[in-house]
Length: 123
Image 1 (tube, rainbow, N blue to C red):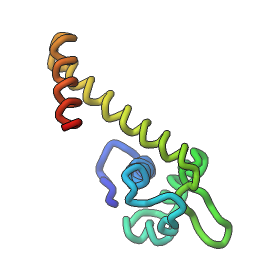
Image 2 (cartoon, rainbow, N blue to C red):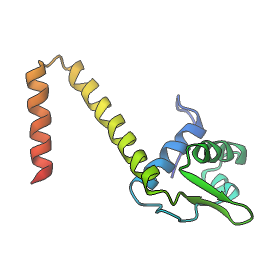
Image 3 (cartoon, rainbow, N blue to C red):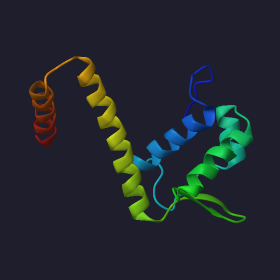
């Protein structure tokens, strides 16, 4: 995990996105303990308050759960992880479609490109 200190996006938001990606891609699995606030802050060289903010937001979304005195864990709710995966896929697809529109392709051309990608992925 890494952060861009000079970027336009706040560091806590970058951390949220990376944690979501790690969970969606099974790098961190259901019920797995995640690094402590202090450990992740040291690893990323950021203020622990920044990590706590990111973790708190992820807890509000029920992506992470906190067990008092033990630490934070990836949710045990499979539907939350599934929803997270769909949300991330939708965001990638929206960005892709936005790029297609910028190319000023016709609707037919855009659909043809998407169909080719889907067919290729199924092979």
